[in-house]
Image (cartoon, rainbow, N blue to C red; front, side, top):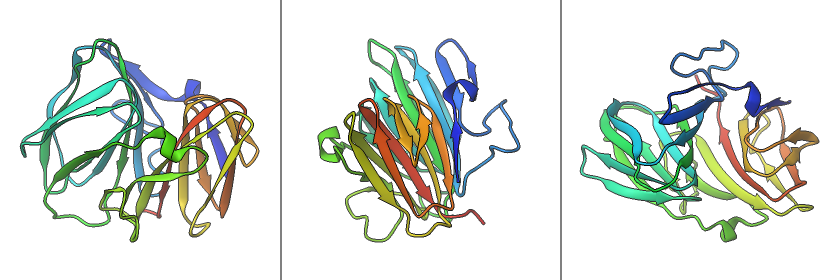
Length: 236
């Protein structure tokens, strides 16, 4: 089963400094059919105006992955971590027992991010933060694991969940495949750029695809495409 979730049909709110689109229920947007997908709880498509951002605020017991689409985001937290993550790269914050952080766009132009929250499969751990570059050339025509709690994914940023966040770039007229370890896994795929089909289901830029009961997916790009995919277990 693959369900297209069009960008135009997403919930969201425009706060001026922040234009947010929500693939799942978030803040004042609630859809009982879009609360989570497996352990994936949040996928926000955020555009943050220059010299603005999220002031310090707390989180606990959530794995928060930020994929930067355009521009850069600057992080600071009460653990003393501070860093700047640029377009194409990823940061991970494991909120654990509690963390307070801010995320600002200190650039001269708008920043666009995917904010992905995955529910952890264990709690009570110390919070942590990290960022890592993932050159797009290294994932041309193939999926690269960006963040993972799956055993063996040693080159990815660690998360405390039975889940992976992956990225790929595919040139127009070419394709890429991904195999789930079981058709019981939950996949959620968003095109950061371009257009493509996923097992024949057509997606445009910033559309989502909710995937379940599939052993493999075949993504064929009709325009140069940048893909982000979450592969997660069921949430109990």
